[in-house]
Amino acid sequence: MINAPSLESLPSAPLLTAEFDIDPSAVYARLRNTYGPVAPVNLAGVPVWLVLGYQQVLDVLRNDTTWRSDIRHWRAHREGKLPTNWPLLTGYEIRQTMFLDGAEHGAARQTLYSALESFQDVRTQRGWGLRAAVLRYADELITTLANETGLTGIADLNAQYTKPLVLMLVHRLFGFPDELDSDVLSSFWQMLDGGPDAAAATARILEDMTELAAYRRAAPGDDFPSAMLAADPSLSDAQLGRELFVNAVYLTEATGNMILSTLLQFLGRSVTPTGNVPDRVITDMVNWVALHNPPIVNLNFRFPSQDVQMGNFLIRTGDVVVPSLAGAHEELASLGHAGGASRAHLAWGAGPHRCPSGAQELTVTVVRAAVSRVFEHLADAELAIPPSRLPWHSGLSVRGLRHLPVRYAIKPTSSVLILERPAPSLGVAGEPRGALAALRRGLRGIRR
Ligand code: HEM
Image (cartoon, rainbow, N blue to C red; front, side, top):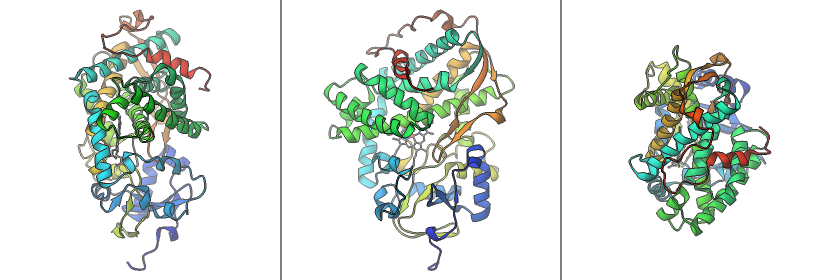
C-alpha cells in the first residue's frame, strides 16, 4: 500500500447533488458498489472519504485516539488549502464539545451532563415543568391552527406546528429574557429555512448566544445556560455561547426532524390514530425512525492521527473522513438486519462523542409530547399529498421534511376549542412570558 493513491489524486464525484436530495439511498448504494465500504467523494470541491460500512463507521466512532475530532488535525485546513468561502468551514470553526478531543472533551462533556441532568428527567420539578410546557405549546399551536386555518382544512405540520414548537422549547429551556428574545427566534427561523439568509442568520445566533451567556452569568435563572455556568463557572461567555449554539441546533433541527418523521410514520398508516397514543407506541416509532430515517445522516468530520488502511484505501494522516450513519444503516438493511426497530441503529452516534444520554432522553420526551398532542386533538388526519411527493431536505448532516401537509379535522370535543385565550398555566413555577407571543413578535417582518 506504500504507493496507494492519495485522496486528492482520486476522481471524486460531488456528494450533494439533486439526486442526493431526492434519493440519498441510491447514491449510497452506487458508492458502495463502486468503491466498497469507504468511498472518495467531494464536498463543494473538497475531497473527503465517506465511510459507508457499518463496522467501519463503528470502528471510527469508537476509537478517538486514531480518529480525532479537533480540526487542528485537518491537514488541508492547517496548510491553508481549502477554497476561500468554503461553505462548510464556518460550522467547523465554531470550537465546541463536538470538536474537542481527549481530556478537554471529557471535561466539556461532563459539564453538559450535569447541566442537562435535571431538565431531562420528568420525575424532577424542572423536567416535569419542561414537559408540561411542551404540551402547553402544542395546545397553543393547535388552537392557533383552529383559529387561523379552521376546524377542518389543510395544514403544514412543519411550518404551523413542529418548527414553532421547537423554537418555543429553545426559548424556554434557554431562558431568553424579554430584551434578547425576539431577534434570536427570527434568526433561528431563517437558519432553519436554509435559504439565502441562513448564513447571516447563523452568525447572528452565535452572537446572540454569547450575549445570552453574559446575561445569565449576571442574572442566573432556572434555565440551561445558568445550569451550564453552575456546572463550570470557568466557561467564558464566548465558549458558553458556542455550546449553547450547537445544543440549540440539535434541539431545533434534529429534534424537529424526529418529530416530523415520527408523525409521518403514523400518518402513513392505513388508520391514523385518534386519541391517546401510549408513550410506548411512540417510543417504538421513534426507534423505527432512528433506523430507517435518522435525522442526522452523516456525522462530524474525523481526522486520522496516523495512516490507516480501511476498505480498499489507505487513509492518510489528516485526511477528512465522514462517518455515514445513513450509509451504515443502508448496509444493515441490505443484510436483512433492519426489519423492525433495531437496537443496532447508530442514530445517536457511538463511542466517546455519542449523543449525551440526557439529550437523548430530552429528545424522546419532547417527541412523545409533540406527537401525542396532535392525535389527541384531531378527529381525522391524513397526508394531503402522496408520500412519494413529500419534499425532503438532504444536507450533508441532516435530513428532514421541508413540509408535512395534512388534511385534518379537529375533534369537536378538543380542549383547544375553548383555548382561544392563552392556555392556562399548569402551575409551573418561574414560567417565562408566553413563548408563542415571543415567537410571533420575532417573526413579524421576516419573509416566510
Ligand atoms: C433527534 C434528536 C437528536 C439526534 C438524532 C442526535 C444525534 C446525535 C449524534 C449522531 C451525535 C454524535 C455526533 C458525532 O459523533 O459526530 C450527537 C452528539 C451530540 N448531541 Fe445529539 N442528537 C439529538 C438531539 C440532541 C439534543 C436535543 C441535544 C441537546 C440538548 C444534543 C446534544 C448533543 C451534543 C452536545 C453532542 C456532542 C457530544 C460530544 O461530542 O461528546 N443532541 N447527537
